[in-house]
Amino acid sequence: MGTPDFSVPVLQGLAESPEHEVTAVITQPDKARGRSGKPVPTPVRIYAESQGIPVYTPKRVKDPEFVNFLKTIPCDVIVVIAFGQILSRDILQLPPFGCVNVHASLLPRWRGAAPIQWAIITGDTVTGVTTMQMDEGIDTGDMLLKKKVQIAPDETGESLFDKLAPIGRDLLLETLKCIEDGTIRPKKQNDGDSTYAKMLTKELGRIDFSWEAARIERYIRALSAWPNVYCSFNGKTVKVWSARVISEESGLAPGTVSFVGKKCFRLQTGKGQLELLELQMEGKKRMDAASFLNGNRIVVGETRFE
Image (cartoon, rainbow, N blue to C red):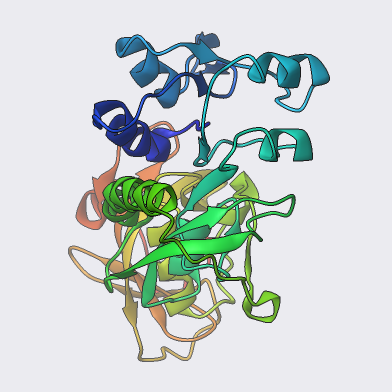
């Protein structure tokens, strides 16, 4: 059971493993995307169908009718990774070895929907992947295996995704082998150490220049795939793709242009300055700061960025 790109390497690892047979794939229904509004299948569905694996797309996996259908599919274990729906107790108890989840954090830190992004947003230096025996809570089940990964100072949501996806594949295969061998030792999570990675929203990407520059820069890196970080300039939306933190203060109010050079410009924040390096004006392509300055007159002391 899985849906986005992050789920595909795990499915691929299972499909290519001579020790396992994928009897079915459950994924989210196709969703309308883009200007055409045409339904687009999930990455998991695309891969599964390319391998001839049966695919099912229930609107609500917990519906009794679909649960009864699941009972007809032979399986020893259900592997779940970024599926996007809550499983009922009936489903959790259905296979002999239960449901094993592959989660992109070092549980109990960052339970929830967006652990990769929140690890970067909050300035974590280490994250990883945890396999877990699922229960009825949200990422609260007993931990099985873990693998740590360092978060680089310039890490983006996309680059961390690329690091963790293959680790999730390998850790899942190792976990299944240990379950089969009877060598796994589940470990309960300490709820007191848990943090929650809430779902990403479009509004989360709006810059608040009263924040310190380092915090804004982390948001820019974390939300680089979606929803992107943005502000308004002369009433139009501007996405900020990359920026650099300048620790020195300008003495100006947050949101004020504090420096303008040939290839970059800076805005004062609640603490430190933010040097903007790559931007995208509404309706235009991404551009470096030099190109932005060529097309827009920016003056120190202005407050046209909000």
